[in-house]
Length: 173
Image: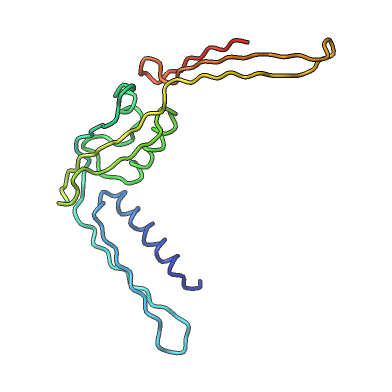
């Protein structure tokens, strides 16, 4: 392959994710590269890794929940208190929460990780989507029986009925 600093950085990120999935979120990876001084077009790449401490998830805290019941969020999480830290599980939890359609913004952060503790609490910040929606449409058309037709349609819905993540909608035309 042709040397590319972008590929080196991408490889560093992939290596960090792999190490973080094994429980080491504080891992540091240093990559140095040097062009061979001979006439050959080679680059020497040296990688040094310091994994740091093995980390476990501590308590999980929630912020920004107003209309959704906590059990619904817990149900979608791939991470649990006491589990070995995994970056992929955090990403999967975020994807699963977004897939409910109930949340507009989700961030999952490690609380106070600056001291590099072995058990780290997790803070889940959530901004909920608007629960209800409504709409009105006016449709025009033609048919064999009539030259011109019109239809007025009204719709109302709620995407988080009673905070349980269930939807309800009414449509009238």
